[in-house]
Length: 142
Image (cartoon, rainbow, N blue to C red):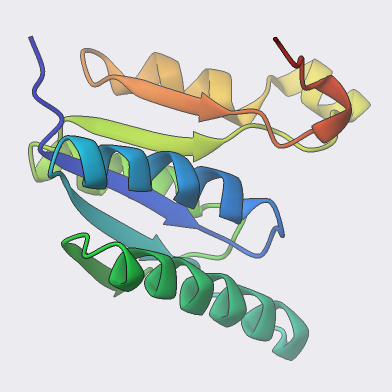
């Protein structure tokens, strides 16, 4: 049974990254897990600024909560960052990969398949936690 001591978290340009950072912080706080962040390496200035903003917010959260973490600059853009994080998780014997699901599902996604489904298939025995980035799909419970 996995102990979730080492968690890999890709961070890209989407504003919803705070949700996946929050989930990984739960493991860091309550399970004393180390979080390894893989930051996207986008080319456009606006995209770079958004990734940097997401990384700073994630880092501040982890520092505030005294969570062990490392931040790596990835090789790929936000479109490939999750796949790079999967490779790192597998090669470094991580216990869990936390990713954001698709914010928008396009007809192309329906034809070629959703990225998160591909990640889950490629992950093999590595557990993957997919965070729902679409607030309109949240279900609140009492």
